Length: 108
Length: 114
Image 1: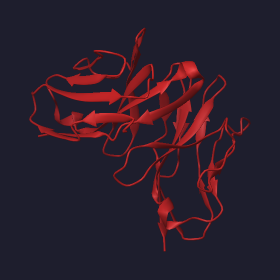
Image 2: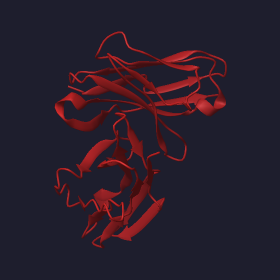
Image 3: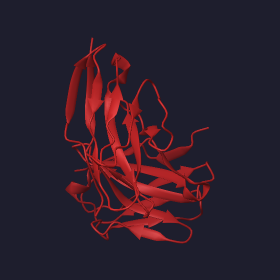
Image 4: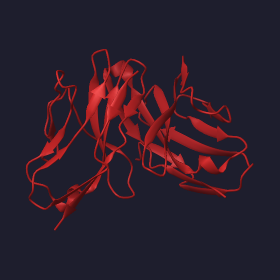
């Protein structure tokens, strides 16, 4: 069965520090992976997807099939980046399988 | 111009009651979903539905039932509410037929069962 693991519940960094939110997945097929973000009291919104290979708000994520990882990175964290981040895996059954989420706290 | 909307935003009710949460999307998507976010912020799929197929997460109690009057709506009905049903429920939609599995989420409904 598919699974998404985000090992860190909370990641606290200072403004300007690099950020890496870890995500590992388990899926026997060809995965499609996403990062979603939930700012305080707001709805979940898509941050980026691996097939786009884009950078959104300075964040990037590379799919590493060998390590089955899709870590989210940003070189310089901003206070407005503070939020819950969810890694999600899409498989052929339509719905997304989410990781347990990592709360990113960027301190001034 | 809200893409996915849910009502109510907050719902407080007593154990044993029956309640419904409504969801509407105006994106023209063909697939809608319900997710449950528990107190630890863990998100879990409950149902996915389009006009052809209902996929149910087998761990969801049969007290929960999705009802879709048309393609733009997927309501969640809950019978005999229990304390453990307290959570935030998110509706979402997507259009896999367009080659995108991106899901658009509603604002959530915070259900509190007392």
